[in-house]
Length: 452
Image (cartoon, rainbow, N blue to C red; front, side, top):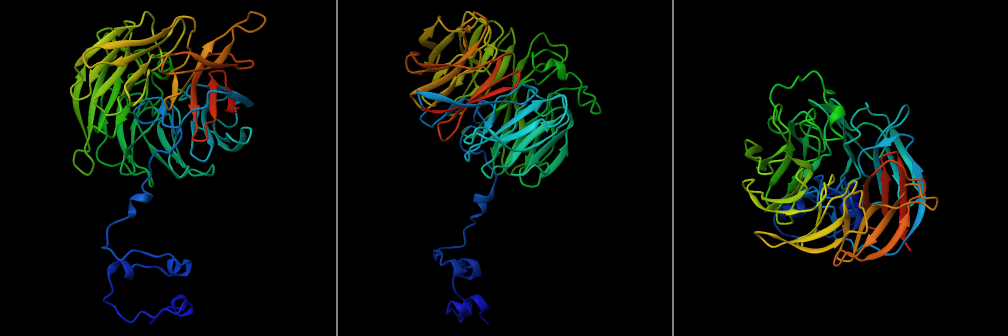
């Protein structure tokens, strides 16, 4: 018999042999007047699978750590608001497509994980306190505005409110998580445990992998003090990079007793067992790697800074070196990489702003700025705008910082905007889908810019 809604709409289901697409019509869809095609019963559940939010969903943007977004960035900005987290920051802001901004702070008391409204003068939506010690790792937004973040000994998810959505134990402190696809999250802890989580329920998929031997699983805080300066006591100090094009994940790992940190390549096998396999270990960068690795848009090349003051390119398939290029300084943050193969060097004290083009077996320098000191990784927005925080003395000669806007094509300055009362060091620049820009410092100041 037809149900009440069908009667009200004048429908009467007489033929029980209608195509399955028709039989799956719900009363709610009928009431809304939505037309459904008469094709076969293909599974359309993929839209509910969690994936990274558009915008700047986590530190260094996408899962590849590229610090690039296809949004055409504004080259003229105005400072709209500033706020303090009343503590310290070790990772840059995450931005959702809806304009929400998330920060993982370290505070003496009160809230530490915070969600603000980037397009509403930084108004706070909610906050919660996490177990402290993991400020070097940032949160991740999915397309439904759920947050994923770690604390020592646990990995958590929050919905659009402050209540815990799910929580799972881990060995160590999770670094910034990355989406793999198929609603699955890659999480690597600072002690070398690698897990894959189902994003909706928090269930561990497959078997965890241990990249470091001899780790005490009962001490989740061991070596946390070595993570921010990337010392040996923190085996995995930075976020992994993942490419959906090659299904490769690359991590920097400093094994106990090793002279320097090397790289590990993992292959993701969706729907198979094992889900992750270790493909290679590389010490091609003999002096050791520093900062997160970055994967090219096609997933075939790994770019990483060496402690030998060189930029390195390695094959993602086997970890073998393709080329290295001298920088003349130690870049302490990852390079930024565009889909067209432009690589802008990382930042830090006494650095310079340099861009290269990957020529296959070598790198060609595209341009170099010796007159600016970039203190953060550059964030590239489309082909026409790049952003980085640079050292800039204040009017009284004291150290200060400014947000520099430059043309990625030639490095020319398009604008410079002082960061009032900025202290510490910058932890990143994030670019939203609305072209708003957020910058933050280690001493907890956050700056919100809008297109002028």
